[in-house]
Amino acid sequence: MIPYLRSQELFEAAQKVLVGGVDSPVRAFRQVEGSPLFVRSGSGPYLHTEDDLSYVDYVLSWGALLLGHANPRVVAAIVEAARLGTSFGAPTAAETQLAQRVQHFFPSMQKLRFVNSGTEACMSVIRLARGVTGRPLLVKFEGCYHGHSDSLLVSAGSGGLTLGCPDSAGVTAEVAAQTLVVPYNDIDAIQETFFRYGHRIAGVIVEPVCGNMGVVLPRPDFLPVLRRLCTTYGSVLIFDEVMTGFRVHPGGAQALYGVHPDLTCLGKVVGGGLPCAAYGGSADMMGMVAPEGPVYQAGTLSGNPVAMAAGLAMMETLEVDFESALLYTNRLCHGITELIVSHGIPAQVVQCGTMFSVFFSREAIYSLAEVQVSDLRCFKHYFWVMLKAGVYVAPSQFEANFVSAVHDQSTLDQTLRAVDYAFGEVKSCLL
Ligand SMILES: *Cc1c(COP(=O)(O)O)cnc(C)c1O
Image 1 (cartoon, rainbow, N blue to C red):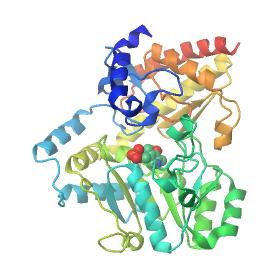
Image 2 (tube, protein in one colour; image 1 turned 120 degrees about the vertical axis):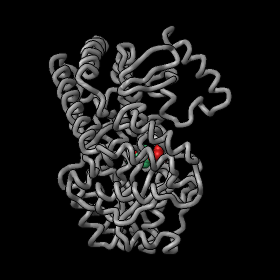
Image 3 (spheres, rainbow, N blue to C red; image 1 turned 90 degrees about the vertical axis):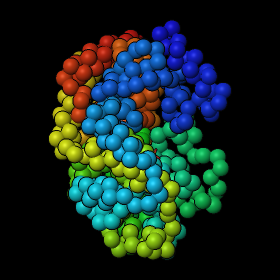
């Protein structure tokens, strides 16, 4: 533990003034039972910590950094925008430009609204679904995370799952009762739910590829069934593509699978590493949002000019950058799978586009229950050995890992050597 002395000192100081020493729970390293590394800077695929150590980074600000850290073009755009003023609370041309770029990749977002976080986008979109339909109920899936607003913090993934508190204190039973929870990929259960409550269901919100219990793919008929049920019952289908947008395909899961939602949430990548998110959909539905319509939603810093500039700079060569990131992810996942086989350890890689998880389980994984049979002891061991070998992977079994357009071959080689070493160690812990 000595190599992380400075980070430990900083963590102790942080805990005196910040709750748990962090501003978002998963950063606290609770699942891997250690104290977090404090970051000083990032460059390309690397994180540099306060302990003067460098790591290949597969967290990438939880997916936001498709171009890696401190991309020169993005940084230059941020500096230029900041020089002109950091916030006006009045419209700027950059908001229209970024909206046009987003729409190019997500044509289902005929109109959109920028907000500051994925949480805000998801919270706003369910208010809109209820406003549009005049119905109360919301359907979500076990293990999907849609930010921390009350109605969505029911059986949620990510940090809640990592900390073993899937439901939050402070969410009233009345609010929770308006959210129906169905197992991910469970066609019978969703059909049954619509059969019983369909005419009271305002909307279904889903991560079209789930990333917040680790990466879990939709079964081939899952998304089409959701589309069909929502259309039949007049409910709103919401794809929460905060993580999958620009990550599984430049046009998100909706482009990858050809299933089109009524409303979409974006976040993470869309702001080029600055706080920014968006929601949008058909012009009719979005026309219900203030000032055009009666569904209220506002934000002092929304459409922030610095965030818009970062998003625009990030998107300049998005198709090419996505292809590079995808190529590197494919190579990495292929390499890890080969090492799983050669070491004979009970693990598997689940990948979609530029995101992936290594699950310490041999069972096919399509739901939260199946994710939860993973061996957390092996994961913990793997995590710390990877760190020792200079690779920073997500500090929880229940999170996705991300690859950028600058995780080049030498970075991948370094990573695969670390994985080889880590699997060897994990194997000895299994015996
Ligand atoms: C990260 C995430 C959110 C929440 O976004 P924040 O910016 O952290 O509020 C919502 N939905 C999904 C699918 C996410 O991955």
